[in-house]
Image 1 (cartoon, one colour):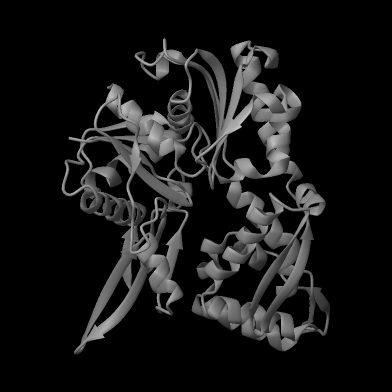
Image 2 (cartoon, rainbow, N blue to C red; image 1 turned 120 degrees about the vertical axis):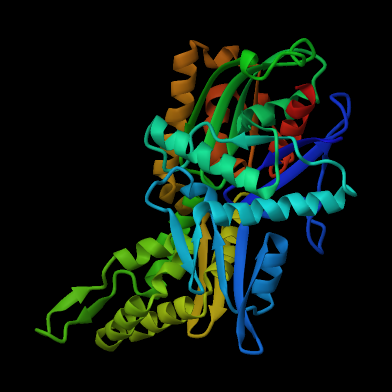
Length: 427
């Protein structure tokens, strides 16, 4: 019997296990490349056998590999960000209707099956699953409850039984606690793809036997994180090269007008890009191209949509963001003619573009401290996890409030899953 912790993320997921509360958690490895992170994507591809259409489905690393190998089809990501939205109930893929629960189940089932293979068939029924403090796009308790119902149903259909939920930052706190030989009051900041979550919690040797909720002084969260940072680079650097802000001359009255901005709202989230590939929208884009005063830019946009290039484009954007965490500038390079994007982004500009999300994170931390009545000087340590915790402007928020010497980090993409496995073992 293995105690299981599952971090189902907007961008990446991971699963950890341990045999007892005394054991350090280990991570399951997925796919041919044996990665410890499972990209939270699903890929659909239709083929024909004789005269019959066959729909092939993949998830995680295998889905990415098939897509990058030139597999024609549809790639869907960031499903977690829709869990709290009653507006998204289903989508059509190659003529078949898939509910949101169907799509999430596909990803979760592939995670469970991969874990079973990695563990040689050990029981994987019971699991502690992470949940954000505030689900992305949740507007009140009814939306939060909807998200949990959908996630619970998907987990059940994927084969997970005896499911318990725990706040994701609590999982990160349990992981951090492994390093301690003394008690601390710690502020956890968990920065995912869709949410930023915070927890003020007592940790240490004398606390380990207590349940997670008894040790929590307070929690806060906001429905934005890494995806929003990426989208600001797209808005400032990519979209203008694809026609944003350009003009066209109307056939009807020769009036010069600006290209409609709604097109580029879809571009801000790469997983929304496929929504532009409807017959009506593609006809509109071709008509727009004929009237455009910058037709080469609309050509590039049409090519991007028509060839489903959202994922490689966002890999280029994400790579630039990661490089900006280490260096003062970074190139955003994506060349697939007629798309020819070669721009250099300065860290100072990037930090200006993400100013509003940074303010929202600051406000979230301030609300947590105010609600708990804890001052910044009473916090012993700040543990930051998740990919966007490495963004210097994010770290600066905490350095300014608590001091650089109190900030800790580590295992940014898998710490939550490992901590959740420990929570499962503790009961």
